[in-house]
Length: 241
Image (cartoon, rainbow, N blue to C red):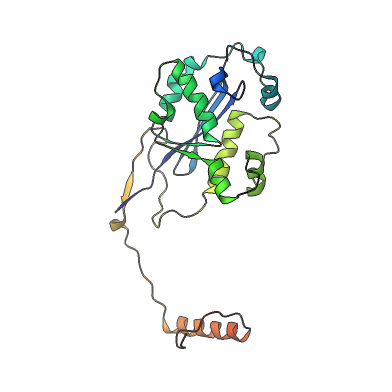
């Protein structure tokens, strides 16, 4: 059996002119942060974009971006190829993924490019994961940062770059835990798409250490002490259960 020990992940966040791409709303900020084997590599792509349309007032109160501020920024068409190339084949990590994917698909469709499902390797929605772990609780990014002790004091407005960095930390907290008995640091170029390094368990046999007589005696003494305090829920090795 073989396990993947290097995995390329891209944390993505967007800001938009409004809520509904089917009504012609556009992406005005896009960030994509790279991780390899659950470790940020320092590689990030971040763009402000000219939406070529007005921005809803409610949206401006969220991210502070206006059409005037964005009028000299590139169009999505100008950065689409770089975005697709950077993100292709990776696992995408997005909070409330259907929202961002809908906007990205709409932008790509305007350029006759493939949809997101044919670009990413897999998709993880951290909002869905959070709701499964914390049903009935607030699970927006601010709430999750507070729950996991991640500082977001500098987040006065929504911003794709900062939010992607915070989401990377939230994702690691949500999925914390050892996933394999064989651990290895990344050794390949993190920005190379389609990383597929593997290691065979047969080359890492697990060494079994048996307890000696002194260790067994110490263990029995410890259980006896616990039993006297009424805190031992199982018998010692030399007693019937």
